[in-house]
Image 1 (cartoon, helix red, strand yellow):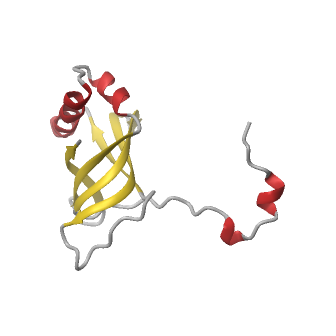
Image 2 (cartoon, one colour):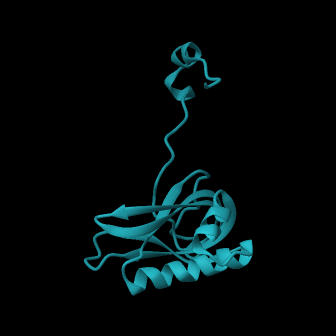
Length: 142
């Protein structure tokens, strides 16, 4: 049961309500984030999603043109595990988590990393048509 009083919320002003967390592509640079992992299937592809919630931007690669992240800004990286590229990117990220958590099994490293605060080095990548941009995590630092 929640401690929130519905009547007090309904009697407050619209400005008093919390803003919806913003999901966006993280700019090139380093960001302190809280991570969570989720296994899922996307379009019949086995995947792991690394969800990130921004704590703060540490350094921007392009400070003149990019804006630091607002705390709470969400993004994610999807690793498609039915091809060598997805597995290779996932392996590079999970190797760091496994070393930091003292585990060897991928599932144990994912479980140990839930809610962990880390620094991620991000790069914006685009699809082949250059019509969509995505957050790409190139390195995780503890």
